[in-house]
Length: 323
Ligand SMILES: [Zn+2]
Image 1 (cartoon, helix red, strand yellow):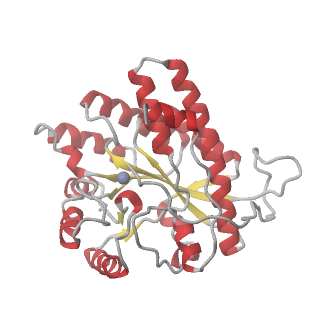
Image 2 (cartoon, helix red, strand yellow):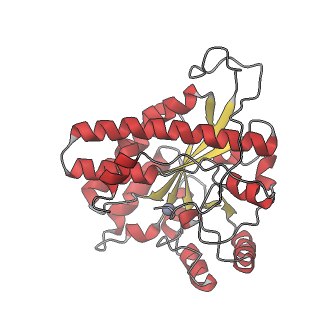
Image 3 (tube, protein in one colour):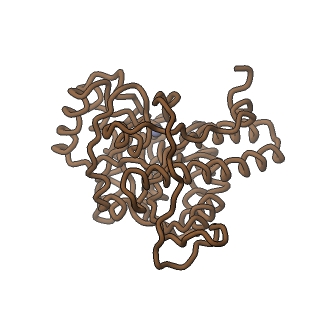
C-alpha cells in the first residue's frame, strides 16, 4: 500500500530530456534520439505479499516474483512487514516465503511490523514498529552472514513535521538502518488491485489488458521522473524504483524490466544506486503526502512541479468499482 493522492501544486515545464552519452543506443529510443545509459535499483515493498493473506496465494506470488527477478538477472531488495508472518500461528510457513528471497541471493529490508504511517503514529510507537519489523528477517539473513541494513517508510511518509522527521532519522541512524529513498514512485498499486479483481473474476482477457496498460503507464512515469532528475541535476542519475509484491508483478515483471531496459536502464543494487551524490540533496518536505524524493528535492529548492502521469481511468474503475 502507498499513499493518498499527490498534493503538490503543478504547472511549469519539465523538459523531458536525455543527455548525450557515448554509449550504445537503447533499443526503446526513437531514431535519432541521443543514446543514454541509465541505472536503476529495483525495490519491492510489502513483503511477503501486499494484498491477499491466503497462504496459497502468497506462496504463488512469492515463487513467481522471485523466479522472474532471478531469471531477469537483476539485483533486488524486498521490504518486509513482519506482522504478515504471524497469521494463525503459522510463523514457520510464512517465514519460508522470505527464505525464498534469501535463498535467491536477494536482499531484504525493514518496512515496519504493521505498515503504520509516521504521519499519524506517535514517534515512540513507530520506533517500536521498526524494532519489531526485522527480527525474523535478521535471523534469515544471518544464515549467509548478512543483516538488515535498509528501512523504507510505509506510504513513503517521513512524518507530520520537521521535529518528528529529524528525531526519527537520528534515531534510525543510531539503530543502524539507512533510509531507502525512491525516485521512480508511481501508482502501480492501482493496476495491482485491478489485476487482483480480474483474477478473482476469472477474467483472463481483462488481466491481459491491465498488464498491457500497466507497462505503458510505468513507461510514462519513467519519462516523467527522468525529466525531473534532469531538471534538478542536469544529468542522468542512479534511480530507485518502487513496486510491490503482488500478482501483477509475479506475472509480468519480465515485461516491466524489458521496458526499463528499452529506455536504456541497467539494473543495479540499492547500495550502488545510493552512491549517487544526488541522494545527499536537501530534503525538507513533511506532511501527509508520500512522493518521490525527486519531488521532495524539487520542493526544497522551491521548484514548481509538473503533475505526474495518472493511472488509466478505466483501470481505476476496475480497481475501485462503484466509487
Ligand atoms: Zn508499503
